[in-house]
Length: 313
Length: 249
Image 1 (cartoon, helix red, strand yellow):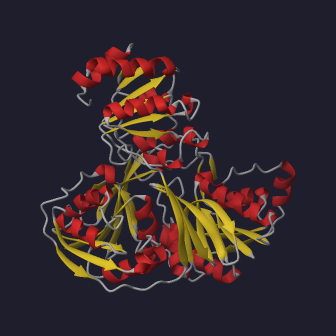
Image 2: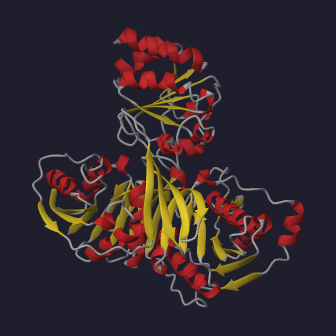
């Protein structure tokens, strides 16, 4: 069976989420194709050819694919999908945006956010913010699936030698135009790929106080996240948000600081390998999922933690 | 302009869900139900657009069991003008709902559909995207700001790396994210008034839509629980545990 993976990229580099999606694809078949749709995206296509396990890269290089406009990319996926048993995309905002539009064009009921593949047509996926896990079986001829990237290891970025094939562009629908973007600039790792994350909640009390977490993040090579409460309070931008409606993460170490542990937040981080909670309220629900809890005032605890890290270094 | 706002009846967001012992699904009997929080945000935005004069009529539409009427009444009490209820005892998948909504859009002649980005039960995040495809309309997902202008709508989308602005040519489907607005509570007089507002009833057959499920739910189970952890008393102890026991730093 041939499997098509929709690559998420910035025309030069392939985003990490694509690599996890390739791993999921390898559990479904051994003929793995990748679609790179973009503008001046030859560099990204060449990078995709190197991904371990990929056999062919389809590159659609045209101005209408410049800014991931869903109305233009969905018909391209529709055009290619007929040759595949499965079409996979990462369950990122990119994949969640484009794949259901392509699925409807193909009259397929998509399966969202899978965490496990049991067979070619049977998958496990979280529902109710991860409070239940559903095993579902698709009866559609082509399966369109988004993949929870934290549930699958990343494929190696090198070692592959896929062939490159150009795909005819499907044209500009003219339905939408890209206006601009404000991307959060950070030297730290991305939340969804970081091995360590330190997140702050409402207990941080201000935007300035997040600097305490940033210093620790820099010592540990960690990413900085936040709860919805901290984002809603305006302490940090929305893309810091970890939770059901923000990013779902599963790092080796997750440090929750001043976060009470609302169901919404737990849904986004409870699959982390080791969870540390620092909160002055001993009754906070976050302690129920923490491997190591420390009931302490964060304004005292965080400087002490920073000093202890220096001592141990 | 008429705007259509689909609303879904789900388990109240503050209730802890329980999986049924026979693994057939989650327990819905005797559980408090409410309007999906993202749908509330969509209703609120439609009302604000009407208050600003860019919308004339707000139609809330629900698809599902008969009791979804309560969810429609909530939307009507918030300020929607009338309701449409598509009753179905067959569980409806996103693709089926999108097909039903398309039929309602065509019947009503609406030019804008405002809806939640996802429902908090199935967490599918598909219906708006699918509806836009079936209609051939422009699509804005994860939207946190909507500005009406001559050509259509300038929307700000919350994407993984930050924010993205896109100009949508109308007609459009817009799916809304948390930070778009804070939904209002319905006042008691408005709740009373909502009881008299019109609701039209359809079945999938009336709308010519086949809603046979494509995906079978084989079982639903609880996620594996996390082992209880330990409490530490000092920073030195915490760093020691992380370094020497968990070996993660």
